[in-house]
Figure 1 (cartoon, one colour):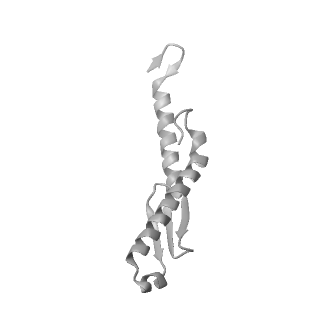
Figure 2 (cartoon, helix red, strand yellow):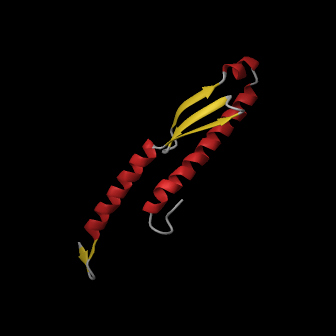
Length: 102
């Protein structure tokens, strides 16, 4: 559908779909590592915020401090999310129209 001034809605929709597919590929291929407690808990997270690996030090478990394990896990997950957002902002921010960035 063409509008006055040469504006082609179909072309624009195809371009938006291509951009969305590229963003999806970049998000899935982006991986960050984050840790807490000096490496006692390590999280590996993809750019779509899926946790793909969680490692808890056996020494931490041996101590039996469940609350500490929970706190360190939450801290590592939060740090991983922050790193993903920061990395995606740099990678994808230039692809988005002004005002639609992170």
